[in-house]
Length: 207
Picture 1 (cartoon, one colour):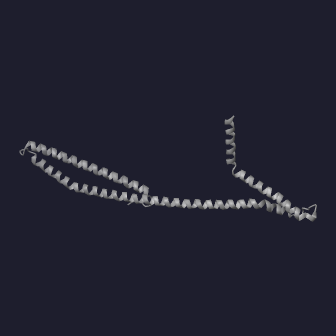
Picture 2 (picture 1 turned 180 degrees about the vertical axis):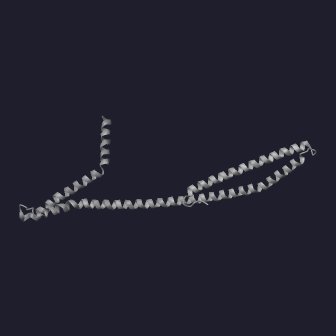
Picture 3 (picture 1 turned 90 degrees about the vertical axis):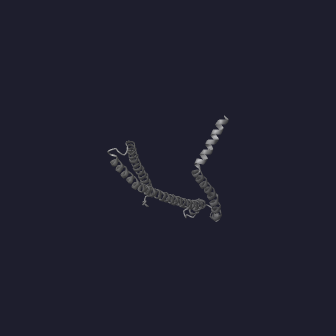
C-alpha cells in the first residue's frame, strides 16, 4: 500500500517495484523459453537419430519433464502478469486521485492567498486614510495648542481673538500644505526622480 504521509515517495517506489517485478518476469520468461528451445533441439536430435538410439528414452523423459515444467510455469507467469497489470492500474488511479487532490489544494491555497491580498489591500487603504487625516489635522492642532499657551501675550489685547484666529489659519493652512508636499515627495520620490531623469535625457537628445 502507498504511504499517505509521503504520496510522492510512495508512488515512485511502487512504480519502481512494478518495473523491477516486470523485468524479473521477463527474465524468467526468457529462461523458460530458452529451456524449451533446448528441449526442442534435443527432441530434434532424437527424431533424426531414430527410435533405436540408446538414449532415446532418457531424452524423451527429459523432454516430457521440460514440457511439464513449462506448462506449470505458464499459469504462474500469466497470474503474475495479471496481478502486475491490476496493481499498475490501481497505482495509476491512485496517482490520478492524488494529482486531483493536489490541484484542489493548490486552488484552495490560491483563493486563500487572494483573500489575504484583498484584506491587506483594505488594511493599507485604511492606514493611508488614517495617515492622511492625521497629517491634515496635526498642524492645526499643534498651532492651536501653541497659541493656547499662557506664555504667549498679544500686543493688542482688545483684538487678540480676531488676530489670533486669523493668524491661526494663516499659519496652519500653509503648514498643512507643506506637510502634504513633504509626504508626497518622500513617498513618490522615485517617480519624481524618474520624471526628472526623463526630462534631462530628452533635453540632451534635443541638444
